[in-house]
Amino acid sequence: MDFPHVSGSLGIVHPLCIEKGRNAEVWDEQGRHYIDFVGGIGVLNLGHGHPAVVEAVKGQVETLMHSAFNALPHRGYLEVAKALDAFVPVGYPLSCMLTNSGAEATENALKVCRAATGRQAVIAFDDGFHGRTLAALNLNGKVKPYKNRLGALPGPVHHLPFSSPDSDVDADTALAALERLFEVEVPADEVACIIVEPVQGEGGFRRLCADFAARLRVLCDTHGIVLIFDEIQSGFGRTGRRFAFSHLGVEPDLLLMGKSMAAGLPLAAVAGKAALMDALPKGGLGGTYSGNAVACAAARTVMDLMSEDRLRRWGAAQEAVIVEAHGRFRERFPMVGALTGLGAMRGIVFEDTATASGSEHLAALLAAGREAGVLLMPSGRRRNVLRLLPPLTAEPEVMAEGLGRLERALETLHP
Image 1: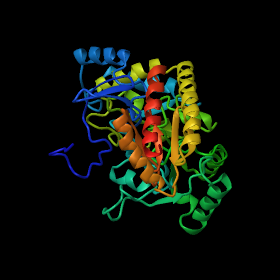
Image 2 (image 1 turned 180 degrees about the vertical axis):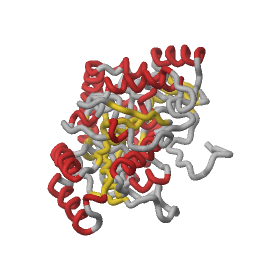
Image 3 (image 1 turned 90 degrees about the vertical axis):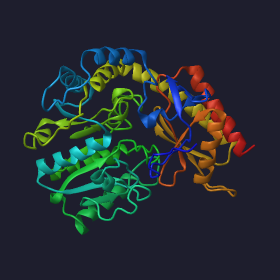
Image 4 (image 1 turned 30 degrees about the horizontal axis):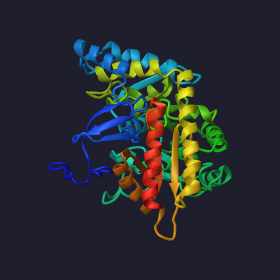
């Protein structure tokens, strides 16, 4: 399918146009049915068109569609801010700014850290992803395709190995790299913040090592460095808890949120300690559409629906069927490697074989899956990790059918 009048620089994973969606199912313009394991790239944890969200949005549209909060505050923004204070499991009162996107949240977090610390340097991690806007780009832990042809980017930014049980980088290795960085490249007292994903999204659904996270927290406290957790993809229930940092036993100073926050409407946030969030002068934060009233109505409903008990049940059920299916796939198909991530945030590594590389196997699977009626999404530096992002609310029979279609697609690659 061609997409005239759309920039060719947009990378299209699946060349089709979907027309309607219901929970984990979508239909294209020709009426063909698919099971959606892409979920808007982590936006649809509650599925397409959750009835409660739809009703909230309809009611808000009839009352107030928008007001620029900086000029004329509206109750929706205030209610979301209050709800976040209760929803985010940290031990301090939460202060927030609502944004339109995760990248915008990242950009504003960098502003907050500079203002609060008087420092400029940032530490990020290999294979991390934090957005496509100019400053966020430099935080990303790989060049292709995000940094090609762009020249110098806002900085200074320094990258470290990502310590994870899903890789061969342990806590000691990552900490040694950090200590070397302080000795060779930038002193600790010039670092404004360290930004890291508790579970990498674009990087292949790899978990942050809990031991390294704990040591990172101590180091940041010692040197006055702001610790930012980017939960734009891993947050709002994806791992079976409201936020993935709960699995680590470590709290951030600033938290980035987005994607599933408003069930498909554009809303994100940077939130954290008030002393940080108040560091810029009045007018230093804001935006015309930030905290749009309709998106806020959706977000309030999302937080009502995402109780800890529901998320635990949804996450456990989805994890169980994914783990079982992966075990079956690994026995049958030589290109299927390890399972990464945790809870319902799972990736499947595709290994090199005698016939093709892991990335080639996965590229072929995306097309074969589409033909079989299941929509899939790649990740990882080499694009060799299949990330599974079905709605947490997917009906068991639909989830089973989607995994069955995935297995049939694998059979076309290795009969």
